[in-house]
Length: 599
Image (tube, rainbow, N blue to C red):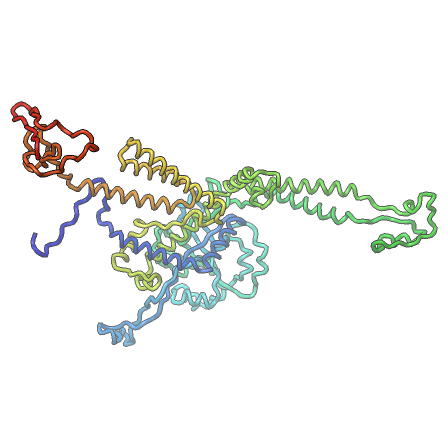
């Protein structure tokens, strides 16, 4: 190899997973993932994002459908087109300087969509949806800003028919339920004095276009926009959250419809309780011949008055006063309260809300019984929790895809502080969703249970101790080679920790350690074996060349005065080997060896 020649690449290690061909470097992939993670942290810290998600969840719980949309908002400015020197503006055909729109900043955000402002293709599966439509109300200024330059808008404006477009107000639009059903009760509070135009933004997935349509003036398409978002799913919304749906339609059934009859019974029972409570009063009658009796009910505590004309021998004062009995009312009220509790219990059973989740419990119940109730209530609500978690995850993925498709490198560097190289930018533009994934932890959408976390930590410690003790026993017994014992122990540890909450960091650390061990084993397999030691000479024969000398009785064979001297005194035990002067029998063909008697 000549001086300065490139070093050949290392050969692939057998048994190790090899990267796919044309795959970017792992460092570039990590940089792209870090950029998107930082961008998502910035866009989700916006208070409007959390508010949009909360409103969508309320829509899912009440009318039955909740949805948000993502928006990409670039900030554009008009700048003159410069010549090659960068200083002289280029003139246009009419002699005026040419101008161009330049993007100086861009943002991605959430927008809450009211459930009546969204129409969808009535299909059975979400993947079959061919169009969706958003309803907007534009003021005169907003309509002029949005559609200025549109041929149809300018035509209507030239005809003097713009006034025909502004027929709606917030109140009238709320009372006009385009999707069916009754108007909301708060429609009259939205205002009825600002006239607006109702425009429909229709996303046509078949032709990859956005149509701006108005129903007034015989229906006019104001503008048709291309698909500027370039999303893989085309639509700027995730799959909407639905309360209850069947397999034949995506029109949701609100939760209230499931127990509406019970809710009516509960309302009637509560009204009767209220009316009956008003009738339970301390009223009665007295003998009108003596009006001093009427003051008995208004006396202060501990005060007495004198009453004349009462014959105490003929029955006394009680024959002159009659109090209306309330025993019947009280019994009836108790039965009504019992019926009210039974109706509420039926509603809780239908909706899956246990008494523990409502903060109601019985002092005599054991902790095990309370945990069972809690787990049953959580299991009944698990589908809704998963739906909200998937909705939030899909919103993050839509934002990540918008950032990858549309953000410039300068914007990404300003937001994250990372260096965006052309390779990283290529990953973001084309390969990000294939090489990386956007995910949120399942437990991050719910409140952390402190007791569950403590129990999980205790299980982690116990699992590690049990695996280490078992590995030590297998090492001592020698059943398996040491490397196999280590790998088996790590797999058992991951198996024990997999169902434990909050054990993900430990499992990831075990995975990294396993990869290091596999790499070390593969490298050791490529190393040459150690040299074989030379064979030992036969008993009594001459030493082989290069072999160590044979020590007999502390003397070297064929050498006097060397080696270790014989032990002195009698405390060293009997001497090793034959006594001096003894002939050692050699194998056939070899000369006998005479053991010397002196030093």
